Image 1 (cartoon, rainbow, N blue to C red):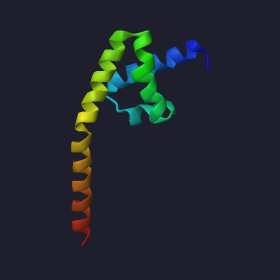
Image 2 (image 1 turned 90 degrees about the vertical axis):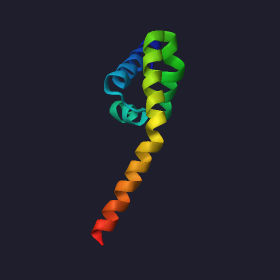
Image 3 (image 1 turned 180 degrees about the horizontal axis):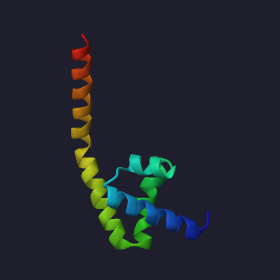
Image 4 (image 1 turned 180 degrees about the vertical axis):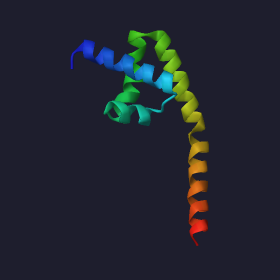
Length: 87
């Protein structure tokens, strides 16, 4: 990939994260890249292209990370409620 293609990809991923409040996993799935690639794009490469987008995208990712334990707990709760209802 050329530097221009990488820059374009990084900016597009950042816009997607910001507009959709997306997680790294959702973004990776949307663009067909690994979670590691998306994370590296946003955390390491994006500040070189747009400090403002980097700041906004990192705020979304930080919020998602803070909510991760809560979402995991809710998913586990739902799983066991469904299992209990099947009995």
